[in-house]
Length: 288
Image 1 (cartoon, rainbow, N blue to C red):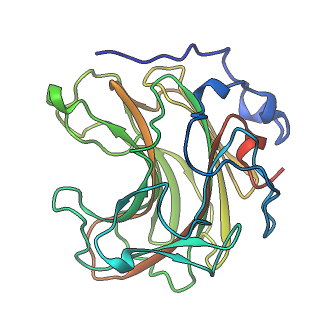
Image 2 (tube, one colour):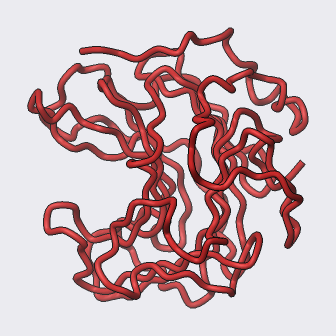
């Protein structure tokens, strides 16, 4: 298998030794940011309490009023819509709704999602910074049902007989409990979806509904021991995990958000806004 490596720099400092400001200088990864991305590049000061993004940062919000910057996995017209309320930054956000039986394709499961697959894939061995915001409405039903609200998906080597696998990194929200999970495997070809799931974070109390929550992730995508996941939730450091994250694939990892779940009778609605991808904490975060 061919592995793409981007020339990793020195091992990043542990999160416990980095302040919110110091993370901006923790790594110079501008080479891993796709400067040719056709989505909006942030230059103006954001509104609604959102701090502006870095000059090289890719920002995929919904100010265009459509899904121009995204691939769609939407079963119905109501599955993904642009709304003016609630909004985290600017004037628009995206509303996802999933009802019983909603499956865009019989082979891909029950979901209402947008993805970055056709636009940007993070190469194995690269370090990436991501940020986005999520709003769970107060009437969200806390069903005890597998539910993923944002994820990074791997690309299997289908031509070599590899199967689709669970996401190497995912934000899950099940029965009112918020967790972040990861999976990894160094196997060249996986014919079974059997990589063990590791819980990187479990929110210590019920996740507050009816408000926007802001995420930042720093990921060094590697199926070897030099991998890294760091994360902040609403400006607070919550994850500092050394070790493998991802699979031994020829092609890398891509971001998705919305709702992906096992089928259930419950209708669920969630809002997302202000996806950012850049080269440092300060380049992507809404908090300083």
